[in-house]
Length: 366
Image 1 (cartoon, rainbow, N blue to C red):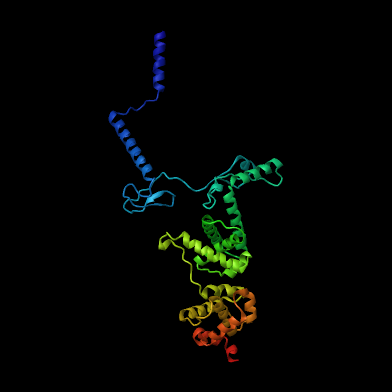
Image 2 (cartoon, rainbow, N blue to C red):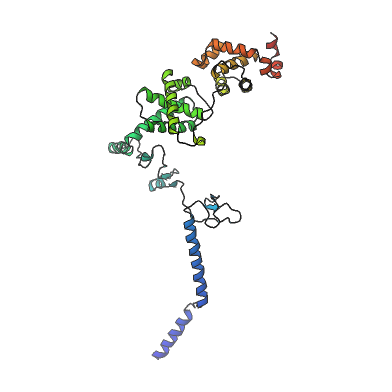
């Protein structure tokens, strides 16, 4: 009886067991060969990502829409599936999730090339209602996170930023001026008035390099320093810049733009609130004066002021020589404006288009 029961149990268990499909040796070899091939391709892919060239055709790699490096060769087009993501990582912390905040926290600060050591430090934030110990901890962390040299640079950068922003200098110019100031700061240490002059000269150099020249008098007004000191600082900064770039290739050296009347026209017209069409007309006259070298004896600032008064006189604007002189400050005197105006009057038929005489006919008949 017991033997029959054991046989019945074994039969029932055999019926419930899942039948496994056994692979032959040939099929197993095929699977292993596929695995080895994929492993080989993966290894080659990882090695190729250490360079900027495709390991198959040696063409240049370029990031595609998915953010992965791909070969630019149309006949190859190989895409690498493994790439390092250098973009910032944003995440929610437990406290943010509990409060329902949608503001994410960045993991790791961006590195500032101008303040490298300070970029690796942590920054502790706390509210005004925080404890006294927490505020002290924030203060101590701020002191220890920045070395003395970078702390001095940071203070200089703050002064440059505030002064330039108050004068309406674009942010891109301010960022470039910080890099210029750091180059000058690394070459030589300045103190007192010379430091103020070099700080102002960094903005002066950036404006000249980007086809928007400012005179030393304008820079002195922006940084509220003496005009003689500003002029000395600009000359010293240019000399240091040339010395720093003496071993550079000619194409890599800084090129300062030429000082022409056209560079001042739009800024002068903006100060006088002139209409856009007359500002464009003043720019046209300035280009004609430059091309034909009609006024070679005066400075570009004086020629620009004379052109502004010339347009104002012939187009019915109520801007006197005294008013223009007051708006432009110490850039030019009334006598110089009048001299430039008289020289422009000799060529008015060549400088002014015909539509000006037709539109302002009543003014020219007087």
